[in-house]
Image (tube, rainbow, N blue to C red):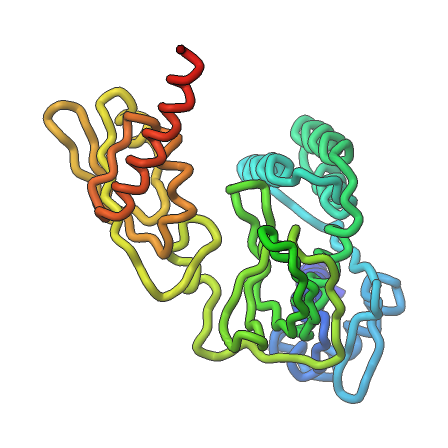
Length: 328
């Protein structure tokens, strides 16, 4: 076999493995053949070759090839340049920062990533994995997240046991998981999907789910729903169709810091002659934005909407009163 043909075959075999990672529910021979631009006979031979070598744990069910439950796909052939390695390093550090619980899957994925990166960078990824492994154990949370992941990957419905954080009441929900999203607020993870009891799109904090039962029944994503569009104007995880315009004015003292970042939802920036800076945002909900606004203290003034201005004013006065008590 010519060298170029061997290279093309190797690339095609890798494409097949990636396809099964994306489609664990099953892939037909015709679909594989169309992806690789080969005959169905060749596609079938490639799948069998991968299976026989233990690199693709699949079985045939009718006209569809399916992954063996719990099977592992070998994806060790990863080639990265230095800048790509740096990008993954930064992503791993962010993952570590927002993983406040021990998660063996995070540790395992980081160690695999470390093995694929240049040694100088991989060593830091290994240290990151070690730090994550020292986090507090949360087996109930991990079981829930694993169940949601399996259901999401296979488009299976789940039965959730949800605990209201305020009332403490528990409720059972039939739920279609459309999307899993981390939030930088509170080191939390959320699942977005269709709640059959409410007949509407709902978001649940994974930490508030006590149990997840993956059902045999499947679901289909509504053709008119896109989670990325849903979260387009979300400051954190609260998306939707309604959009609120928020206008904030920052003092000259912090304006330089405001200018350094591209904040989510910004549609306009105005520079003042006195060094101040005014940003206009479009967001779905102001609730998630309020802690960020308060974090700037007196250097951030809410100009609009008026209701948010009043709320922040009341909260800032209440915070100031707490410290005034300590000075008496």
